[in-house]
Amino acid sequence: MVYRKLFSVTGRPRRLDGGALFGTTPRNAWIEWQSPDYDNEVELACRALLVQQDGSNILVMAGTDALFAPLPRTCRCQRSTPGLLEGLARLGVEEAQIHAVVLTHLHAMLAPEVRLAVSEGDAPRLLFPTARYLVGRQHWMRANHPHPRDRALFVPQIISQLQGSGRLHLIDECSSDLLGEGWRFHLSDGHTPGQLLPEIDMPGGPIIFAGDLVPGRQWLALDQTTAYDRNPESLIDEKERLLDHVVAERGRLFLSRDPSVAMIKVARDKQHRYQPFDHHAALHRLDS
Picture 1 (tube, helix red, strand yellow):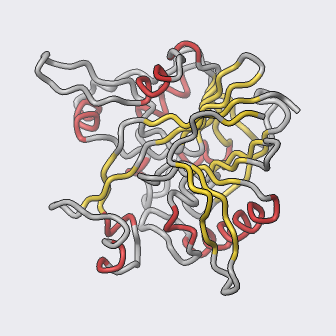
Picture 2 (spheres, one colour):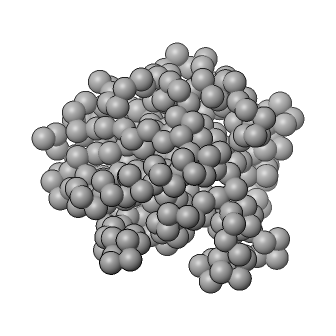
């Protein structure tokens, strides 16, 4: 087995409308999970997974929200919000030391100031200028020819920069030669067609990056979906298969959006509901 070290990397959190995020769940139920602000928005984590193996740094990200470089500050009094690069720096990793970036999908919900810069024709560059970007071929086709239902979730400036980078690698199979042995991909179409969910072999059981199939603990409930999911019925079936796999393999789920928890184990109770246990607020280091 390849020797690996795994870390969670926290970027700049984002805010989304709670009603859209929790879908058909009544507001008086989901406010018990997360308290909304005056605009009915709740905070979500922006959490990536750093995998170090064979002298390489591989970053796994859910979507492309954090793929734009930070905007320059216009004045010294402007508050600087720590982001993905600061999270990597705390682990002693510089931007140029990232060798590969695995993107589960290409949706992006940009911060207001970034959205404004993009709309004014001043889109920032993409992070990680020497890394290969790994994307599923099926999802790449979706991003280039989006359906009107989710067109707003794809940022053309991100797609064009990925295309023009010369470092885009499209994945057709459930594995990738670039990543080596011990990596597999689960394909999910419910949230968006062609979402890739990496599974990484570790001695204590595999780690599965749950992406936007299971963004947080509340989505362990099979019927819990969001308004952003393209095919909720398909998503529920995919979620059940993935969670049954996690339970059978005694694996762990890495959660990219949960504001409090980065990694969990999962059990199925007598009522056939999935329950989280062995919570980890952060993944400081997990060795193979």
